[in-house]
Amino acid sequence: MAAIDYDMLANELRRAEQEKRELVRLTAQYPEMTVEDAYAIQERLVDMKRKDGYRIIGPKMGLTSAAKMAQMGVNEPIYGYVFDYMVVPNGGAVAMSELIHPKVEAEIAFILKQDVKGPGITGAHILAATEYIVPALEIIDSRYANFHFTLPDVIADNASSSRVVFGSRLTPPRSLELDVLGASLSINGEAKAFGAGAAVLGHPANAIAMLANMLARKGGSLKAGDVILAGAMTEAIRFASGDVVFALFDQLGTVSFRATE
Amino acid sequence: MTTLQTEKWEYYSKLLLKSERERQPLSPLTELEPTMTVNDAYQIQLRTIEQKMKEGHQVVGKKIGLTSAAMQQLLGVDQPDYGHLLDSMMIENGGTVPWERVMQPKVEAEIAFVLKRDLVGSRITVLDVLQATDYIVPALEIVDSRIVDWKIRLEDTVADNASSGLYVLGGKPIPVHSVDVAQIGMALYRNGEVVNTGVGAAALGHPAFCVAWLANKLYEYGKELRAGEVVLSGALSAAVSAEPGDFFSARFAHLGEVRVQFAL
Image (cartoon, rainbow over all chains, first blue to last red; front, side):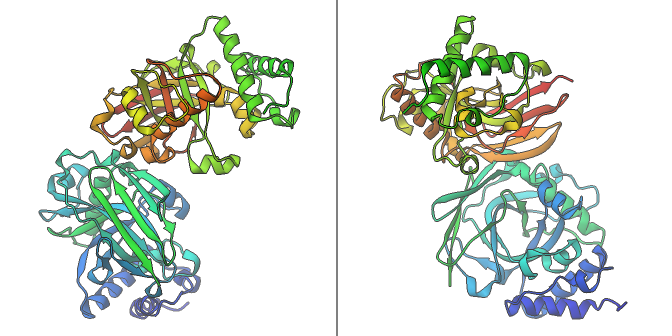
């Protein structure tokens, strides 16, 4: 059995993203790959992107819905990182030629006013440390053929991070009930998916708290100013060139983008 | 258009009433009577409601069903349907449903409209509905089917009072002018765990649009929505099957919570 070369696999994933090329899942070749191996590959990948000159906007949570966790047979969500090159302006264009087989989800993001370091962090700690909530559309784009992957594969692939559109309005969390905050996602004016914050681990702040606790295992923490995606409030929807994707969030405003060639 | 004779309407209405009384599900009516139309089905439903009124039940409102794109696709239809709410179908918020009251129940969370003015006409709009609304409250609808294994086509569910079972109103009533009903978020919990979430727009884009559809549909049958009626405007998420002992609750933005317990 070949030893897992973290650097080599991270580089393969990085090139697949750059070249818009589908990979066969890593666990097909390395069935013994663990979650720890996968995060080690993700770390190498993140380092490479930073050396390429990209800046981290914030960490993000993935697999935060009961349905997705059941589908993957796991009981803990995963995390990855959003970089500056992934951010598309609200109302801007997402070029399909830069992506493989993207899907879009409605989410909310937290902007922290102070660092938060686990363990022992709860949703209440997160709400107290949050300066603003901002609505978002996250575009996920697995580098694996047909979104076919196991848990270590998707972790190594930076949790399928690809693009993100943030709304233009920041709202302090104080008056919001985030678990019953509703969102609807439409494509070309046709409603496609609906949800509320409770779809994210019962409450979006719980997802951020879990992230702080997961990062703490490796000595990491959440930083003031980080913009942190909590996880999907709706199912992920495919879109195509020419589509206008629009999400409406109760009390938080709207987010949209156009998909171009 | 109807194809069946009035005696058949009576016959199927009696079958449905017997099924409910004896808790014995029926084969789909559309298998017994393949030529049955939707209008026949509404006539069967009306016979059932008239019979229940003779037995002392009172109509207190209506419910709208098939309001999601997913449900409409499943049944191959392009419009909702409706049924009647009777006083005997109401469960108090936090109350218990005796298992003998249901057959194969599922739970849906909805926004209920209570009207302060009659809504009469064939050209009722969303704004008419909002103006005629006294308040909205969160609701749990316990849908149920007298048809075996929920093997329903449109005509089956319409004849079966739109698969109505019981309903619970809860939370706090609020006027509609202070919120955008289409943006009200909802989380549905079974035994304390989130089972699904939704938002007002999941009901055909806007719950008040569903109520407007109902007012216009009723007018076709020479009927109307009356001040004081409760209208369950349509599910905001998929229906969830209930088992004996289950506790369901739904929380809504701005509207609070509604709860129900199924007895063991």
